[in-house]
Each structure stands twice: as structure tokens, then as C-alpha cells.
Length: 159
Image (cartoon, rainbow, N blue to C red; front, side, top):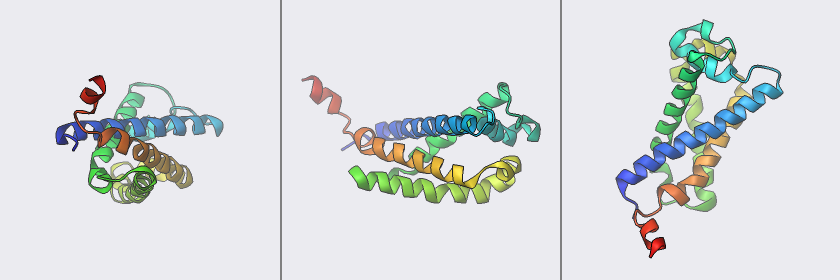
């Protein structure tokens, strides 16, 4: 049985890692589409700094956008715990992908629409859909191997 505190910390980390993979994929897509690599973190930063932050230029606001995304991703890793508990293999991946796919439109419609109207108006929904599926894929792959691993698994391996 995994230690609940350790599971929580691992879920935070798994969400942050899945968010980082998602960020890198979105940034590579931006470059492939001929826009700035900083477009998405700057759009996220517009929540705190207003529409002027969504300029595609690297700045302090870009870091704030990244940190906002990473903190949100970490939180989403924790929120996924009850849905993923006890699942393995394809089940964990499919449930995590369904969770990511179902949660982002809710957050988008009920939070982003008023908290960050600049991003709400600017993002491509197809790009957002596949990137959130990628988040779910990474989270689902990590969950059974890392989050639900018993607390003493490392101790047993070293004996």
C-alpha cells in the first residue's frame, strides 16, 4: 500500500512533469506554425499582467506563465488521484486521458473565460485538445509505476 503523503507528493510531481511535456509539445508546435515559442506561456501570463503580456516575447511575465501552468498541472495530478487509484496499464492511461480531456473544457469554460479572456479568445481548440490528451497520456503512464508504488519498494530493491 502506498504511503498517502508520498502518493500526494508523487502526484504533484507527476502532474508537473506531464505539464512540462505538454508545454514542450505546445512550444514546438508554435515554432512549427511560425509563431513565437513563448506564445502559450505569454498567453497564460496575460491572466496576471493583462493582454499586453501576450506578446510572444521572452520576459519575466513568461516565467510567471510557465509557473502558473506548472502549478496548475501539479494540482491536476493530485485531483486525478481518486480517478486513477488502483488502475494499471491501459486502464490508467485511458482514464487519465479521459480525465484530462474532460477537465480542460470545464476549466476553460468556467475559469479561463473570466480569469483570462485574452487566452480564452486566442487559443486553438484542436491544439488544446491534443495537448491535454498528451498530458493525460504522460500522467497515466506515470501513475501506476510511480505514484502507487509502495513506500518501501526502494528498500526491498536494496536488500
